[in-house]
Length: 240
Image 1 (cartoon, rainbow, N blue to C red):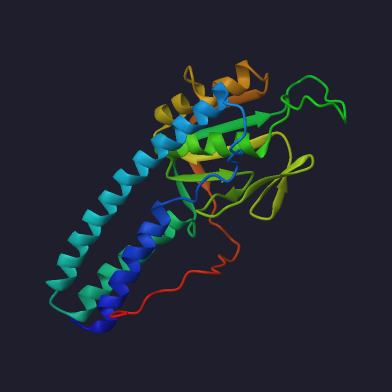
Image 2 (tube, one colour; image 1 turned 135 degrees about the vertical axis):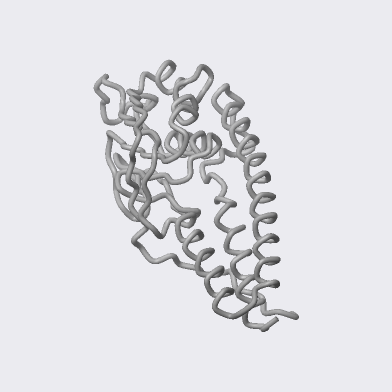
């Protein structure tokens, strides 16, 4: 088989794995932090997320093995190109570079209705970046295929960080209320936020944050419009 085509196949497989394995949540606490129900829940969520990722990776590998078999048995270059183009479009969707639509859920999260006094030490009534990260994690574990926050498509390395009264996502500052859209099975996504023992219920019951969620038959999520920067990783040429 043409060496160029083999390299393209290997590149697509690596791209698929890179898309499926999301970046780890960046709000880990230090080694000396107290163990609370919240941190236990976060750890459980991460474990479930890891299990889900392993299953997804195995599926991707099997799919790519089947694609490789098709390419190896293809009769001509045109047929091979058609198969590769189909993969490219699929990976664009998974990576966040195409507008998508489908059923799912819309979530609205906002600060507690109680007035917050600047300077007070208790900030439990305010939505923090860690709260958004945990909600995103629960949605991913529940099978969300695409996620948007305030018009910002969430991709594998989308930062979600606090910056004073705002939360910054993809270089854009967002303020409460935060609107999260997710495409996937509406029932599973709704349960991931509202079922007993979920992080969403914890925010609502223990911290009095205002959370509303609605299942919808059609949700539109825009593509990621910024440039995806790669600083450290480089492709390995065949034979290296």
